[in-house]
Image (tube, helix red, strand yellow):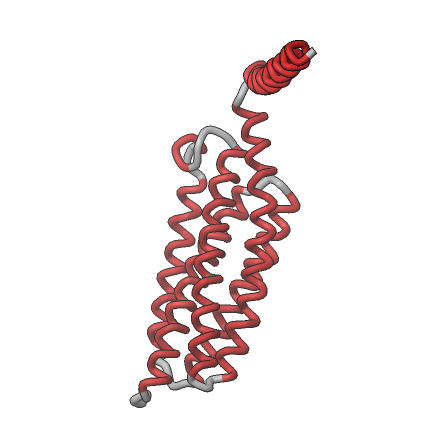
Length: 209
């Protein structure tokens, strides 16, 4: 590999870190998709898996254009592929051991993991875009900006899914009586507060008259 100047060496460093992250997410998504039974969520995971693979290829292309070491990327891809096999084997283990006590709980934990990964990638690509712009690498800045938009869209989708799945966990794992009792308790407390306030107001009016 030819010697890189300081600018390109730093950009290649950041792009290699991003490439590694994309491969990690690809591995996680492949496992999570097999565990997902909610079809809107599963469909979006598949779409993002396609996006993630495209991100990795685009990053690899840019790294090589800058003179980066392609062998490092190949090693990362091999490790990711091996991790997929391990992840799939783990996915076949009892649900309560791997991801909680039920199907919805498993998906909730996966969605939270994905959401954290997406936000980590958002921060990473914002940094790459800003750095590339500041050193005059418009092509890398444009690539980071393009990937960033797709990561932000996925993060927004997951942000909406997490409460939906969390409610499904509550429905599956908390008896209906306990869920409604909690609701009645809160409603009763609110009514009690209003009643005390009304009584106080009536006493003040009576005192003035």
